[in-house]
Length: 459
Image 1 (cartoon, rainbow, N blue to C red):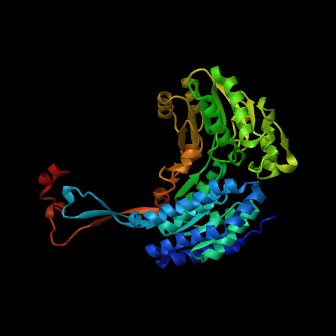
Image 2 (cartoon, rainbow, N blue to C red):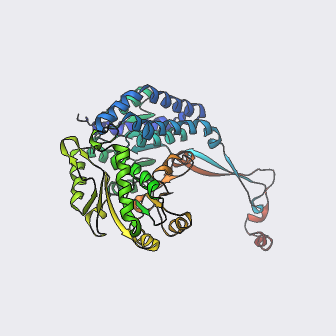
Image 3 (tube, rainbow, N blue to C red):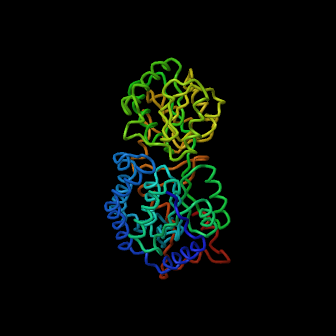
Protein backbone atom coordinates (compact mmCIF):
# COMPACT_ATOMS: atom_id res chain seq x y z
CA UNK A 1 0.00 0.00 0.00
CA UNK A 2 1.32 3.45 -0.95
CA UNK A 3 0.54 6.45 1.20
CA UNK A 4 -1.00 9.41 -0.61
CA UNK A 5 0.80 12.67 0.12
CA UNK A 6 -1.10 15.57 1.63
CA UNK A 7 -0.89 18.37 -0.97
CA UNK A 8 1.87 20.71 0.17
CA UNK A 9 -0.23 23.79 -0.64
CA UNK A 10 -2.68 22.70 2.08
CA UNK A 11 -0.04 22.81 4.79
CA UNK A 12 0.06 26.63 5.20
CA UNK A 13 -3.75 26.62 5.41
CA UNK A 14 -3.72 23.99 8.17
CA UNK A 15 -1.09 25.90 10.14
CA UNK A 16 -2.92 29.21 9.74
CA UNK A 17 -6.20 27.64 10.92
CA UNK A 18 -4.50 26.15 13.97
CA UNK A 19 -2.75 29.40 14.81
CA UNK A 20 -6.07 31.25 14.60
CA UNK A 21 -7.78 28.66 16.78
CA UNK A 22 -5.03 28.82 19.38
CA UNK A 23 -5.26 32.61 19.34
CA UNK A 24 -8.94 32.38 20.24
CA UNK A 25 -8.00 31.08 23.69
CA UNK A 26 -10.21 28.01 23.39
CA UNK A 27 -7.43 25.63 24.48
CA UNK A 28 -6.64 27.51 27.69
CA UNK A 29 -9.56 26.16 29.71
CA UNK A 30 -8.92 23.04 31.79
CA UNK A 31 -12.28 21.53 30.83
CA UNK A 32 -11.40 21.83 27.14
CA UNK A 33 -8.08 20.06 27.72
CA UNK A 34 -9.59 17.31 29.84
CA UNK A 35 -12.34 16.69 27.29
CA UNK A 36 -9.72 16.43 24.52
CA UNK A 37 -7.74 13.87 26.51
CA UNK A 38 -10.89 11.87 27.25
CA UNK A 39 -11.81 11.87 23.55
CA UNK A 40 -8.36 10.53 22.68
CA UNK A 41 -8.75 7.78 25.29
CA UNK A 42 -12.13 6.77 23.86
CA UNK A 43 -10.73 6.85 20.33
CA UNK A 44 -7.94 4.46 21.33
CA UNK A 45 -10.51 2.01 22.68
CA UNK A 46 -12.66 2.32 19.55
CA UNK A 47 -9.75 2.03 17.10
CA UNK A 48 -7.75 -0.59 19.03
CA UNK A 49 -8.55 -3.46 16.67
CA UNK A 50 -7.85 -1.54 13.40
CA UNK A 51 -4.59 -0.22 14.86
CA UNK A 52 -3.50 -3.70 15.97
CA UNK A 53 -4.37 -5.16 12.56
CA UNK A 54 -2.42 -2.41 10.80
CA UNK A 55 0.61 -3.01 13.04
CA UNK A 56 0.47 -6.68 12.12
CA UNK A 57 0.23 -5.89 8.41
CA UNK A 58 3.10 -3.40 8.36
CA UNK A 59 5.46 -4.88 10.96
CA UNK A 60 4.22 -8.39 11.79
CA UNK A 61 3.71 -7.05 15.32
CA UNK A 62 1.51 -9.33 17.42
CA UNK A 63 -1.53 -7.99 19.25
CA UNK A 64 0.15 -8.68 22.58
CA UNK A 65 3.27 -6.71 21.68
CA UNK A 66 1.20 -3.96 20.04
CA UNK A 67 -0.83 -3.53 23.21
CA UNK A 68 2.09 -3.73 25.64
CA UNK A 69 4.52 -1.46 23.77
CA UNK A 70 2.15 0.92 22.00
CA UNK A 71 -1.48 1.18 23.10
CA UNK A 72 -1.12 0.59 26.84
CA UNK A 73 1.66 3.18 27.13
CA UNK A 74 -0.48 5.89 25.53
CA UNK A 75 -3.51 4.93 27.62
CA UNK A 76 -1.40 5.08 30.77
CA UNK A 77 -0.05 8.48 29.79
CA UNK A 78 -3.57 9.83 29.29
CA UNK A 79 -4.64 8.57 32.73
CA UNK A 80 -1.64 10.24 34.35
CA UNK A 81 -2.44 13.58 32.71
CA UNK A 82 -6.13 13.45 33.57
CA UNK A 83 -5.29 12.65 37.18
CA UNK A 84 -2.76 15.47 37.56
CA UNK A 85 -3.70 18.18 35.07
CA UNK A 86 -5.43 20.53 37.51
CA UNK A 87 -2.39 20.49 39.81
CA UNK A 88 0.06 20.96 36.94
CA UNK A 89 -1.89 23.95 35.60
CA UNK A 90 -2.08 25.67 38.99
CA UNK A 91 0.33 28.64 39.31
CA UNK A 92 3.32 27.62 41.39
CA UNK A 93 4.24 29.79 44.36
CA UNK A 94 7.93 30.59 44.69
CA UNK A 95 9.82 32.51 47.36
CA UNK A 96 10.24 36.25 47.03
CA UNK A 97 13.40 37.76 48.57
CA UNK A 98 13.19 40.48 51.24
CA UNK A 99 14.55 43.09 48.81
CA UNK A 100 11.36 42.71 46.71
CA UNK A 101 8.80 42.84 49.52
CA UNK A 102 5.81 43.21 49.53
CA UNK A 103 5.71 41.58 46.06
CA UNK A 104 4.81 37.93 45.55
CA UNK A 105 6.07 35.60 42.82
CA UNK A 106 4.47 32.85 40.76
CA UNK A 107 5.39 30.52 37.89
CA UNK A 108 2.58 30.09 35.36
CA UNK A 109 2.61 27.27 32.79
CA UNK A 110 1.29 28.56 29.49
CA UNK A 111 0.93 26.58 26.24
CA UNK A 112 3.62 27.20 23.64
CA UNK A 113 1.08 27.35 20.80
CA UNK A 114 0.98 25.58 17.44
CA UNK A 115 3.22 22.52 17.42
CA UNK A 116 4.51 19.92 14.97
CA UNK A 117 4.98 16.26 15.99
CA UNK A 118 6.94 14.03 13.60
CA UNK A 119 7.02 10.32 14.47
CA UNK A 120 9.03 7.34 13.19
CA UNK A 121 7.84 3.95 11.95
CA UNK A 122 9.17 1.60 14.64
CA UNK A 123 6.56 2.43 17.31
CA UNK A 124 4.22 4.41 15.09
CA UNK A 125 1.29 4.62 17.52
CA UNK A 126 3.11 5.28 20.78
CA UNK A 127 5.64 7.76 19.39
CA UNK A 128 2.98 9.83 17.64
CA UNK A 129 0.27 9.84 20.30
CA UNK A 130 2.36 10.03 23.48
CA UNK A 131 3.70 13.48 22.54
CA UNK A 132 0.16 14.43 21.48
CA UNK A 133 -1.01 13.76 25.04
CA UNK A 134 1.49 16.35 26.24
CA UNK A 135 0.34 18.84 23.60
CA UNK A 136 -3.35 18.42 24.51
CA UNK A 137 -2.60 18.57 28.22
CA UNK A 138 -0.54 21.75 27.87
CA UNK A 139 -3.22 23.44 25.74
CA UNK A 140 -1.44 23.45 22.38
CA UNK A 141 -2.67 22.68 18.90
CA UNK A 142 -0.80 19.98 16.98
CA UNK A 143 -0.05 18.89 13.44
CA UNK A 144 0.85 15.19 13.40
CA UNK A 145 3.14 13.67 10.77
CA UNK A 146 3.16 9.82 10.85
CA UNK A 147 5.74 7.77 8.96
CA UNK A 148 5.09 6.71 5.35
CA UNK A 149 7.07 3.50 5.96
CA UNK A 150 4.09 2.02 7.84
CA UNK A 151 1.31 3.10 5.48
CA UNK A 152 -1.50 1.03 6.99
CA UNK A 153 -0.82 2.27 10.51
CA UNK A 154 -0.50 5.85 9.28
CA UNK A 155 -3.79 5.59 7.39
CA UNK A 156 -5.64 4.26 10.44
CA UNK A 157 -4.08 6.92 12.68
CA UNK A 158 -5.17 9.59 10.23
CA UNK A 159 -8.74 8.30 10.18
CA UNK A 160 -8.80 8.05 13.98
CA UNK A 161 -7.55 11.60 14.52
CA UNK A 162 -9.82 13.08 11.84
CA UNK A 163 -12.87 11.44 13.45
CA UNK A 164 -11.86 12.61 16.94
CA UNK A 165 -10.61 16.21 16.62
CA UNK A 166 -11.35 19.26 14.52
CA UNK A 167 -8.40 19.97 12.18
CA UNK A 168 -7.83 23.43 13.64
CA UNK A 169 -7.04 21.68 16.94
CA UNK A 170 -5.32 18.45 15.82
CA UNK A 171 -4.58 17.63 12.18
CA UNK A 172 -2.73 14.82 10.40
CA UNK A 173 -0.46 15.41 7.42
CA UNK A 174 0.65 12.35 5.45
CA UNK A 175 3.53 11.84 3.06
CA UNK A 176 7.21 11.47 2.33
CA UNK A 177 10.23 13.69 2.83
CA UNK A 178 8.85 16.27 0.37
CA UNK A 179 5.97 16.78 2.79
CA UNK A 180 8.42 16.85 5.73
CA UNK A 181 10.37 19.60 3.98
CA UNK A 182 7.20 21.62 3.42
CA UNK A 183 6.22 21.22 7.08
CA UNK A 184 9.65 22.38 8.22
CA UNK A 185 9.30 25.53 6.11
CA UNK A 186 6.49 26.68 8.38
CA UNK A 187 6.96 28.60 11.61
CA UNK A 188 6.09 26.52 14.68
CA UNK A 189 6.08 27.19 18.40
CA UNK A 190 7.64 23.75 19.05
CA UNK A 191 8.84 20.86 16.91
CA UNK A 192 8.80 17.44 18.55
CA UNK A 193 10.78 14.98 16.44
CA UNK A 194 11.55 11.30 16.99
CA UNK A 195 13.94 9.68 14.54
CA UNK A 196 17.58 9.33 13.58
CA UNK A 197 20.38 11.74 14.56
CA UNK A 198 20.90 12.56 10.86
CA UNK A 199 17.29 13.68 10.40
CA UNK A 200 17.43 15.37 13.80
CA UNK A 201 20.10 17.68 12.43
CA UNK A 202 17.85 18.55 9.48
CA UNK A 203 14.98 19.36 11.85
CA UNK A 204 17.19 21.47 14.10
CA UNK A 205 18.58 23.38 11.11
CA UNK A 206 15.06 24.19 9.91
CA UNK A 207 13.94 25.16 13.41
CA UNK A 208 16.89 27.56 13.77
CA UNK A 209 15.51 29.78 11.02
CA UNK A 210 12.64 30.83 13.29
CA UNK A 211 14.39 30.17 16.64
CA UNK A 212 11.84 27.41 17.21
CA UNK A 213 12.44 25.22 20.27
CA UNK A 214 12.83 21.52 19.57
CA UNK A 215 12.53 18.24 21.42
CA UNK A 216 14.69 15.68 19.63
CA UNK A 217 14.28 12.03 20.56
CA UNK A 218 17.01 10.32 18.57
CA UNK A 219 18.97 7.12 19.05
CA UNK A 220 22.50 5.81 18.82
CA UNK A 221 24.45 2.75 19.85
CA UNK A 222 23.24 1.80 23.31
CA UNK A 223 25.84 -0.42 25.02
CA UNK A 224 24.99 -3.50 27.08
CA UNK A 225 27.80 -4.32 29.51
CA UNK A 226 27.84 -7.81 31.06
CA UNK A 227 30.43 -7.85 33.82
CA UNK A 228 32.11 -10.81 35.51
CA UNK A 229 29.74 -10.70 38.51
CA UNK A 230 26.55 -10.75 36.41
CA UNK A 231 23.88 -13.39 36.99
CA UNK A 232 24.43 -14.98 33.59
CA UNK A 233 21.03 -16.64 33.15
CA UNK A 234 19.03 -13.60 34.25
CA UNK A 235 21.21 -11.27 32.18
CA UNK A 236 20.83 -13.48 29.09
CA UNK A 237 17.05 -13.65 29.50
CA UNK A 238 16.56 -9.90 29.91
CA UNK A 239 19.00 -9.01 27.15
CA UNK A 240 17.44 -11.52 24.72
CA UNK A 241 14.04 -9.99 25.43
CA UNK A 242 15.30 -6.43 24.99
CA UNK A 243 16.91 -7.27 21.64
CA UNK A 244 13.97 -9.37 20.39
CA UNK A 245 11.38 -6.70 21.17
CA UNK A 246 10.22 -5.23 17.85
CA UNK A 247 13.08 -7.27 16.27
CA UNK A 248 15.60 -4.82 17.68
CA UNK A 249 13.91 -1.89 15.91
CA UNK A 250 13.74 0.06 19.15
CA UNK A 251 15.59 3.33 19.79
CA UNK A 252 16.60 2.07 23.25
CA UNK A 253 17.34 -1.51 22.20
CA UNK A 254 20.69 -2.83 23.44
CA UNK A 255 22.79 -2.17 20.34
CA UNK A 256 26.02 -3.99 21.15
CA UNK A 257 27.37 -6.31 23.83
CA UNK A 258 30.46 -5.73 25.95
CA UNK A 259 31.03 -9.01 27.77
CA UNK A 260 33.74 -9.76 30.35
CA UNK A 261 36.18 -12.17 28.75
CA UNK A 262 35.99 -14.59 31.69
CA UNK A 263 32.29 -15.33 31.13
CA UNK A 264 31.97 -14.92 27.36
CA UNK A 265 31.43 -18.58 26.46
CA UNK A 266 28.94 -19.20 29.28
CA UNK A 267 27.04 -16.02 28.47
CA UNK A 268 26.82 -16.74 24.72
CA UNK A 269 25.49 -20.23 25.44
CA UNK A 270 22.90 -18.79 27.87
CA UNK A 271 21.89 -16.08 25.41
CA UNK A 272 21.28 -18.66 22.70
CA UNK A 273 19.09 -20.68 25.06
CA UNK A 274 17.08 -17.62 26.01
CA UNK A 275 16.50 -16.59 22.38
CA UNK A 276 15.13 -20.09 21.75
CA UNK A 277 12.88 -19.92 24.82
CA UNK A 278 11.46 -16.60 23.70
CA UNK A 279 11.13 -17.33 19.99
CA UNK A 280 11.35 -21.17 19.66
CA UNK A 281 13.95 -22.98 17.58
CA UNK A 282 12.49 -21.37 14.45
CA UNK A 283 11.79 -17.67 15.16
CA UNK A 284 10.43 -17.20 11.64
CA UNK A 285 7.41 -19.26 12.65
CA UNK A 286 6.89 -17.36 15.93
CA UNK A 287 3.77 -15.20 15.69
CA UNK A 288 5.25 -12.64 18.08
CA UNK A 289 8.52 -11.90 16.25
CA UNK A 290 8.46 -8.68 14.24
CA UNK A 291 9.86 -8.28 10.70
CA UNK A 292 12.09 -5.58 9.21
CA UNK A 293 9.99 -2.62 8.17
CA UNK A 294 10.92 -2.89 4.47
CA UNK A 295 13.34 -4.56 2.07
CA UNK A 296 15.86 -1.72 2.30
CA UNK A 297 16.07 -2.18 6.07
CA UNK A 298 16.45 -5.95 5.56
CA UNK A 299 19.33 -5.41 3.14
CA UNK A 300 21.08 -2.96 5.44
CA UNK A 301 20.86 -5.17 8.54
CA UNK A 302 21.72 -8.45 6.77
CA UNK A 303 24.80 -6.67 5.47
CA UNK A 304 26.15 -6.77 9.01
CA UNK A 305 26.11 -10.58 9.06
CA UNK A 306 29.46 -10.72 7.26
CA UNK A 307 31.15 -8.34 9.72
CA UNK A 308 32.55 -11.01 12.03
CA UNK A 309 32.23 -14.54 13.37
CA UNK A 310 28.61 -15.62 13.89
CA UNK A 311 28.10 -17.11 17.35
CA UNK A 312 24.28 -17.37 17.37
CA UNK A 313 21.75 -17.37 14.53
CA UNK A 314 22.54 -15.92 11.11
CA UNK A 315 19.51 -17.00 9.04
CA UNK A 316 17.39 -14.56 7.03
CA UNK A 317 14.66 -14.52 4.37
CA UNK A 318 14.33 -11.55 2.02
CA UNK A 319 10.80 -12.43 0.86
CA UNK A 320 9.57 -12.41 4.48
CA UNK A 321 11.80 -9.48 5.61
CA UNK A 322 12.95 -11.87 8.34
CA UNK A 323 16.26 -11.87 10.19
CA UNK A 324 16.99 -14.36 12.96
CA UNK A 325 18.38 -12.92 16.21
CA UNK A 326 22.10 -13.10 15.56
CA UNK A 327 25.22 -12.54 17.67
CA UNK A 328 28.40 -11.64 15.78
CA UNK A 329 31.83 -11.39 17.41
CA UNK A 330 33.50 -8.33 15.87
CA UNK A 331 36.36 -5.89 16.23
CA UNK A 332 35.94 -2.37 17.57
CA UNK A 333 36.66 -0.82 14.16
CA UNK A 334 34.18 -2.90 12.16
CA UNK A 335 31.40 -1.16 10.22
CA UNK A 336 28.71 -2.61 12.48
CA UNK A 337 30.25 -0.69 15.39
CA UNK A 338 30.01 2.64 13.55
CA UNK A 339 26.27 2.67 12.83
CA UNK A 340 23.09 2.17 14.84
CA UNK A 341 21.91 -1.33 13.93
CA UNK A 342 18.13 -1.09 14.44
CA UNK A 343 17.62 -4.79 13.92
CA UNK A 344 18.14 -8.19 15.60
CA UNK A 345 21.88 -8.40 14.93
CA UNK A 346 24.05 -8.15 18.04
CA UNK A 347 27.78 -7.37 17.77
CA UNK A 348 29.81 -8.72 20.69
CA UNK A 349 33.14 -7.52 22.04
CA UNK A 350 34.99 -8.56 25.18
CA UNK A 351 36.77 -6.62 27.93
CA UNK A 352 39.03 -7.54 30.83
CA UNK A 353 38.28 -4.77 33.35
CA UNK A 354 35.24 -2.63 34.09
CA UNK A 355 37.30 0.51 33.51
CA UNK A 356 38.13 -0.78 30.04
CA UNK A 357 34.43 -1.15 29.25
CA UNK A 358 33.70 2.32 30.62
CA UNK A 359 36.48 3.80 28.52
CA UNK A 360 35.10 2.11 25.40
CA UNK A 361 31.67 3.69 25.98
CA UNK A 362 33.01 7.14 26.84
CA UNK A 363 35.12 7.31 23.67
CA UNK A 364 31.94 7.16 21.58
CA UNK A 365 28.86 9.36 21.14
CA UNK A 366 26.52 9.53 24.12
CA UNK A 367 23.86 6.82 23.67
CA UNK A 368 20.13 6.98 24.35
CA UNK A 369 20.39 4.12 26.84
CA UNK A 370 23.06 2.20 28.76
CA UNK A 371 22.60 -1.24 30.29
CA UNK A 372 24.87 -2.76 32.93
CA UNK A 373 24.70 -6.27 34.35
CA UNK A 374 26.77 -6.94 37.44
CA UNK A 375 27.03 -5.93 41.09
CA UNK A 376 25.55 -2.59 42.13
CA UNK A 377 28.84 -1.36 43.60
CA UNK A 378 30.44 -1.49 40.14
CA UNK A 379 27.24 -0.25 38.53
CA UNK A 380 27.49 2.97 40.56
CA UNK A 381 30.96 3.57 39.15
CA UNK A 382 29.79 2.88 35.59
CA UNK A 383 26.88 5.32 35.93
CA UNK A 384 29.10 8.00 37.49
CA UNK A 385 31.74 7.85 34.74
CA UNK A 386 29.49 7.53 31.69
CA UNK A 387 26.64 9.55 30.20
CA UNK A 388 23.46 8.38 28.46
CA UNK A 389 19.87 9.43 28.03
CA UNK A 390 18.71 6.72 30.46
CA UNK A 391 20.05 3.56 32.04
CA UNK A 392 19.06 0.24 33.59
CA UNK A 393 21.05 -1.81 36.05
CA UNK A 394 20.54 -5.56 35.56
CA UNK A 395 17.73 -4.94 33.08
CA UNK A 396 16.97 -3.55 29.63
CA UNK A 397 14.27 -1.27 28.19
CA UNK A 398 12.27 -0.97 31.44
CA UNK A 399 13.21 2.60 32.31
CA UNK A 400 10.77 3.70 29.59
CA UNK A 401 7.92 1.96 31.46
CA UNK A 402 8.04 4.34 34.44
CA UNK A 403 6.16 7.51 33.51
CA UNK A 404 7.68 9.24 36.56
CA UNK A 405 11.14 9.03 34.96
CA UNK A 406 12.24 11.48 32.25
CA UNK A 407 12.70 9.93 28.83
CA UNK A 408 15.07 11.60 26.42
CA UNK A 409 18.55 11.71 25.01
CA UNK A 410 21.74 13.65 25.57
CA UNK A 411 24.23 14.89 23.01
CA UNK A 412 24.01 12.87 19.81
CA UNK A 413 21.04 10.89 21.18
CA UNK A 414 18.78 13.92 21.54
CA UNK A 415 17.66 16.82 23.68
CA UNK A 416 14.62 17.43 25.84
CA UNK A 417 12.63 14.94 27.90
CA UNK A 418 9.02 13.85 28.22
CA UNK A 419 6.59 11.38 29.85
CA UNK A 420 4.20 12.30 32.66
CA UNK A 421 4.63 15.82 34.01
CA UNK A 422 7.59 16.33 31.70
CA UNK A 423 5.33 15.91 28.64
CA UNK A 424 3.16 18.74 29.97
CA UNK A 425 6.29 20.83 30.56
CA UNK A 426 7.72 20.05 27.11
CA UNK A 427 4.76 21.77 25.44
CA UNK A 428 4.57 24.61 27.98
CA UNK A 429 6.44 27.81 28.74
CA UNK A 430 7.12 28.34 32.43
CA UNK A 431 6.36 32.03 32.72
CA UNK A 432 7.57 34.07 35.68
CA UNK A 433 5.09 36.59 37.07
CA UNK A 434 5.67 39.10 39.90
CA UNK A 435 2.65 40.67 41.57
CA UNK A 436 3.45 44.02 43.23
CA UNK A 437 0.80 45.88 45.27
CA UNK A 438 0.35 49.63 45.07
CA UNK A 439 -0.32 50.35 48.74
CA UNK A 440 3.43 50.54 49.44
CA UNK A 441 6.08 52.02 47.15
CA UNK A 442 9.53 51.91 48.71
CA UNK A 443 11.85 54.64 47.37
CA UNK A 444 15.19 52.82 47.42
CA UNK A 445 15.06 51.55 43.80
CA UNK A 446 14.48 54.98 42.27
CA UNK A 447 17.13 57.43 41.07
CA UNK A 448 19.16 59.13 42.35
CA UNK A 449 19.64 56.06 44.62
CA UNK A 450 19.73 57.99 47.88
CA UNK A 451 19.30 54.75 49.82
CA UNK A 452 22.14 52.96 48.02
CA UNK A 453 24.36 52.30 51.07
CA UNK A 454 21.51 50.70 53.00
CA UNK A 455 20.26 48.75 50.00
CA UNK A 456 23.75 47.43 49.22
CA UNK A 457 23.74 45.56 52.51
CA UNK A 458 20.54 43.74 51.54
CA UNK A 459 21.79 42.64 48.13
